[in-house]
Image (cartoon, rainbow, N blue to C red; front, side):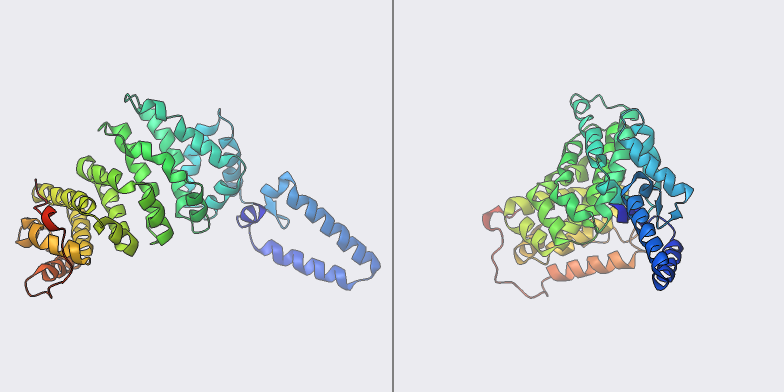
Amino acid sequence: QQQHYGRMTAQNGSTANSNNMNQGSLGGNGNRDSTLDQQQQQQQQQHGPSSIFSSNGEQMSEENRRVLEWIAQVLNANTRESALLELSKKREQVPELALILWHSFGVMTSLLQEIISVYPLLNPSQLTAAASNRVCNALALLQCVASHGETRGLFLVAHIPLFLYPFLNTTSKSRPFEYLRLTSLGVIGALVKNDSSEVIHFLLTTEIIPLCLRIMETGSELSKTVAIFIVQKILLDDMGLQYICQTYERFYAVGTVLSNMVTQLVDQQTVRLLKHVVRCFLRLSDNARAREALRQCLPEPLRDATFSPVLRDDAATKRCLAQLLLALSDQAEPTMTPSYGNHQQSLLP
């Protein structure tokens, strides 16, 4: 734990200490004894409370000292709310914050307590704006831990994402609930952002896809965007693509929601959602069975020029759409792999 606190201090103090140690060891016995005394004092400092605020004899900056004070205040129920707010503001500015959150005694437990305390407010819907803001500050710190390369795996092993699923399962359209879902999606989005098969395997075994699909249909534009981003990342992983295309029911569930989004986008013309929809369909076409099914049921607005105006300035998405249509065209090489048999039908209701 101390090494993570140490990284937050200035670095030139360690060089000075090293030079002093070398000078002492080159002197006589008296100097050598003095050096040993200094080493013992340093060891005591490393394991004492002062080590949180200093390392290698260098005083920490005022900002980092405040960060560690807020970390300590998270453990106190009376000071936790304000500490969570302040730490959530600093999560982009303190590179080692994820490590400190994870390795500081009791902090992760306190964050989970904040999350669990909201469960009784979910059904019936009693979540207030103040309660939503407070738990979302805790979720923002969890996102910080989920984003860091050294804590992401530990985050998964502890199954912490499961604590967020009740939030994703809510359906209320009020602002407190929408904010809660969006922030929870942000934690999952941070996990999948680094294209880790370990993360994808965990999510597939915990049924995240149905939760994302429902939000893709009924959530706000921002929530839909993060939810479809998660589904797209799952599809881009070979294991995720195989999982979704393994049965007709899974393919149909994903394809139907994507097709419904296309229908909505005909009116809304939201380019950032459309680009994710196109990329999801394009990735599905990499699977032989799904490709055969999409030849029959790809939504018509993607085949004609419906979205030409909105894609005029988005060359990358236009290219993806052209690749999709080429893969599904009659000129594409036919596959010998059977499709989904008698189940095959239009994905549109």
